[in-house]
Image 1 (cartoon, rainbow, N blue to C red):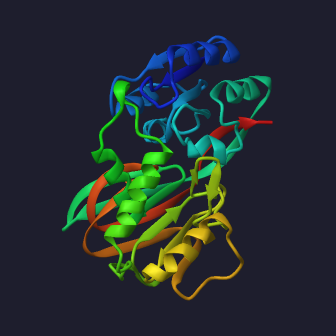
Image 2 (image 1 turned 180 degrees about the vertical axis):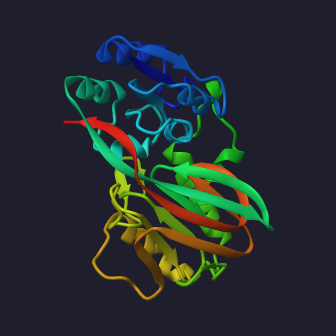
Length: 299
């Protein structure tokens, strides 16, 4: 039996798209989410021996992996504006094309996941798996800024243009640059931290962003954390995201293939996982869950 979990409010999801995906996949039980957290509940109800397809954006994918029982294979169909996870797994950006490729021949790929436990002034605030990225500081601040703008009609999130505009506003607000604001325990001080489970870290339209170019789905966690990012250095740092070069600049703290990373913040800072705002934190422990998920990919 196969189940298709659909977020009808994802940026690219329409009734017509759902019907086209169903035709490509063949007989499936289609389940529509109704609000935040619903995909986790639907995924938790899946039985061993079933297959799950998820048509959503990255937030819906994240919810599914936080509810899915161990050993259940899952395929991620891009229904969001960015949909980093299926693209990083090599699936087409178009959901119907991705469904067709999987229907023609799917293979299981065992991948690792990330997991974060975070607290605010000693009180637990987050306990969450993530599929491709997490961050404390700048990127989480960007996610929050976009979320403050609200959703479009139908609950859809703003697209890449709005993200780019809000990023510009954030950089202007930090015109003096980014000073050390947290400690990666045992590694050093940094201004903000990006934790990656794969490469690319994200996309800007069709352009992949390589915050941690050595990260792989089969490995542990990678960290990229600018020690201090001055205004003059921001253009070079942005270029490095698009065209990474060998070597590690002195201003950038990097960790590769880690089992655990502990971050302590000087003050409350925002935390995001897979593009979802989890609130402010003062401490967070990131762990690699190696070989945690069987993702279905095209042969």
